[in-house]
Amino acid sequence: MANKVLAAASYAEQKYFLEKEFQELPESIQEEVRIICVVMAQKLCCTFLMGFTEEGKLYFETVRQEDDFDFDEIGAELEIKRIQREKKELLRALELWYAVYFTEEGEAIKKELLEKAGKAQ
Image (tube, rainbow, N blue to C red; front, side):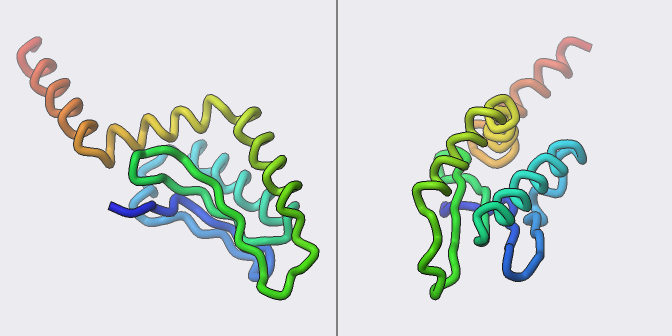
């Protein structure tokens, strides 16, 4: 299983994209993800991606234009660290949501909880 892109925003194209398989996220979470991607793309003048690694960890990626020699990689890294600090709870919740809905372990946990709920009734 490879990395999965959650969302991306492009400064050059002025576009935002949310991967279809993540449309089930609550609207408020989708809006926060959109704001993060768009603001970071604007601030850094790049394409900004959020996604999940094979292990289910959230990652951020900046993609700059080939001819953009002024891109500030250190500044971009500092901005990402700021987002990780300020949005710690949101990012943790996204990783948990991903683990439950997109990993084998999450499927097993869901199945077990549904079975327990069925027996409790």
